[in-house]
Image 1 (tube, one colour):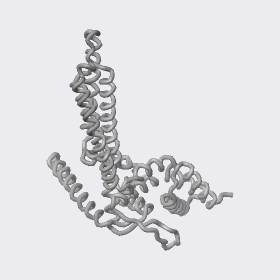
Image 2 (cartoon, chains in turn green, yellow; image 1 turned 90 degrees about the vertical axis):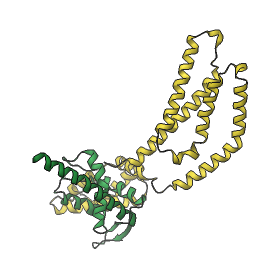
Image 3 (tube, one colour; image 1 turned 135 degrees about the vertical axis):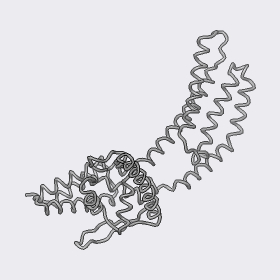
Image 4 (cartoon, helix red, strand yellow; image 1 turned 180 degrees about the horizontal axis):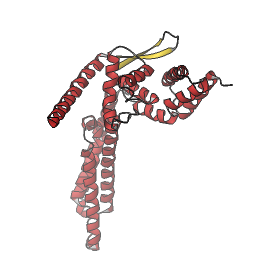
Length: 115
Length: 210
């Protein structure tokens, strides 16, 4: 789903959902904005292929993690906005906990290796 | 002269032809297409170039269709109620036919020597087919695809082994009746098929679009 030189396919697959949940954790958003945001936050290192984001969003919606609504934007264009549901917030907290654990272990090991 | 609205209408037709039939995803993709086109124009492209880049970035219709297809049933199908209904139906069928089935099995086993069918092979066949009959009830609890798959494989290999053994042995004392082989083949195929079905269902659930 991303075009990223630095991330492996496995890491890409594993990080898609937590990233979307975290982005939506900041407030409701729509597909195009999510892509732009992740691109900006990663310094252009993570670039999701545009069309592929929507099947993922739809899957997460069907799994009850997020919900959507159609609304008119400021420019008058109709957009589908996504937001987190309670299940999504729980899943996001779980993801953060797990990723922090992995990050902590990796950081600790790197420190040991350089000392 | 490039007409953006006409081009978007053409793009929608192409997406529809590629199989994205549901209007909601198509509308959403169109909004994305318009956003990206607008962004490209702001970045300095002319309208035609901007649209071409946006179309390329959004991807081909058949690829998107496949991705949407992967998620189309998740959450939409009331999995548990359907499985419950299937199980109930299977239970009814099993309740109606299982005594008959057991009766046939009993006759097979008792008369095995007369029919020259191995009682062991008949028993294994009956078990293999019974497992399949009761699978709709067991299915929601079957977490591992290996269980039915390995069972089917063992039955199939045993059948092949027994058949070869008989062929290599004394032809006047064929113990492996063709009906036994058919029973074994049916049981094994059903279990192997179920194993593969469980595996593909698990893969589908685990698939992350990447």
